[in-house]
Image 1 (tube, one colour):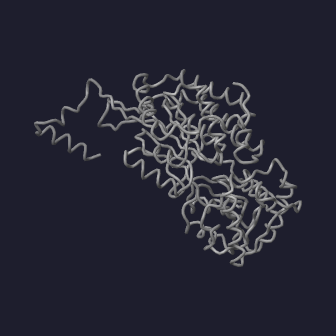
Image 2: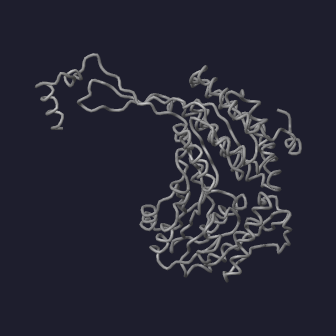
Image 3: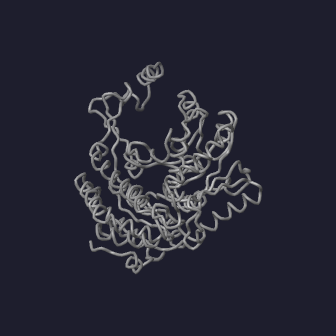
Length: 484
């Protein structure tokens, strides 16, 4: 593929239009019915083609994402968007043959010598709605899983990252025929129409509020949904935590992509006696990672003006209500709002009624809440909607296990943030308000597959004994069955 600048990308068509969606779906469904389930070799060939194209376009991918953000760290894009995607494709391709094999399951003594197995089949046509915060990774990883499962895919990327969305349309159209993979561009009206289509499965990544609307629209067609949402992911710092290591991991997880990450630490629960130590270490960690902010290419901008104002309003409200705000600006620079570089900020013991304690922050603001006993921290988490991620920092395995057993979240990182997402054999997904269903690795393959249960009866069997007309033999057989 030729090198394409960000300016060039923006000239690609921005919308297929809501009126075209039904026709695209119909063509893909017809192709699926005509072609049937692709072979293992065909699926692996598609994955290999996708992986190679990503490798060849690494620079372009980072460039278009940065154009959408104003500034997105190239290293963050290569790590969080490109490496994670390539690793997922590699893992899936190497294990796909095993995943596709029918799985034999046991049958009870009464059904022997019959056999039972589970057959994995593609569901048909899958719809994927992807978000703006990691616009490449969160489009390609579910797409890759659907291809591995043998499905056709319609992808609706976010209109808030138009350069990346246009790139995805051009990129994928050069790899796959439109009746296998089609990218639909457009604004909220297209997204709304997209979610009302009678897909065989609908996969949505985004906010909980929009997720409710997507699920409501899908229900009209009884379309199964996977909802990858968000929420307020807590960090619990134990009283025996190694504070420098814990804070560095928390600050890394909070400031990567300027906090615009669904599993970013949203607030921290710290032992009251160690709160000031946490603040000092946080200031040191920001200085270490980002000695300057204004012209630092490593520090990502907020995606648009609306989200920048939203974050500013959180800080203004916190100050107005008397909360202490610690802004960490290592070089003391004046940050122009137009550049959308937001100063990393700690908010100390904020009231729970503040917006930053009600909403998912999605920015470089970190509330710090003090607690006296670990029991209080666990109760605080459990009184709130179940989060997508939870992080615990501490050395005592007994306290660690207490947190793991008594809290419920989509996933957990112990003494580290974010990295549980990179483990391909772990399911990634939420619970309750943070999501429905999971993917990554085999879980992604199964999400986009139909698990068909099959019972194979032996030529010689005893089923005839339980068929009418019923008599003494049926009574005897039922008596034997009830004894077990």
